[in-house]
Image (cartoon, rainbow, N blue to C red; front, top):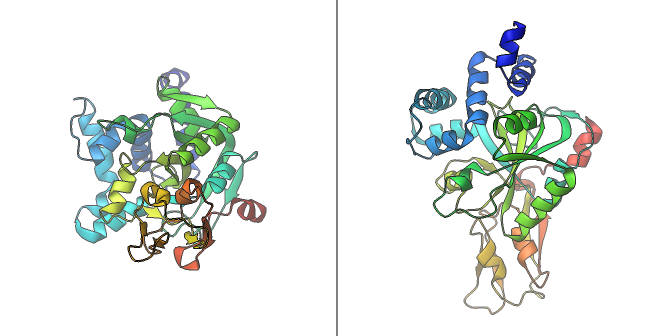
Length: 313
């Protein structure tokens, strides 16, 4: 590539391409999809949610990238939903695990993660320069009519993603320290929002972001409720100490997955739908009586145990 062309192409774009070329089977189509997704996330996500009101010049590019991404899903039906989820999905993580993800101090490379993320494309997690973190205005919230606030709660983690987003979205993204990232996670937990570690084929097939999702604005949570298995459980399920529960209903009101309810026949007892519970821990933080905790459930998959994974890498 000539020096003149290099000046025309931003450094973040070059880094994304170089990183992709290290991956066996990575194609220009993969790069195109990842570039469009990260370069115009607000338009892309709007398109995916059915909003076709794109700028004229972007319509063919965004449409092409999304169609390439969903080529396996063209037939529709349940197979299409599975194909979509296999290529773009999130792992629910409790706050302590999310804090570990943003607090890593050195690059790590993790392999064979089928046991951790139960989707076909989440085989690798690679985080280069994990202390490079960018807070991005959430594309889902930004596109909502009455969005939840604040907006800048999407955490882009590691390279080349952090630099790409910061470079291409200077008005909507800002670099932050690990301490502020942890503060954002805790504040979002207190608002009753869920941490998702997101993976996407087009983003080099690996972990690239922690989204802090509300059930009203988040496109992934909406898709999940509509039967697209985009979210994997944390590996935990809520557990109740009935002796401590006073039946205040705070946990029921805040549960983003509608997994909790109050029994009509027994005062002060919460019922936990273990099938619906994703182990996010929002109810645990909301309970004023400390009557709830997270309990390991092997049927829910493996937790994202960062410490163990780092030691094994």
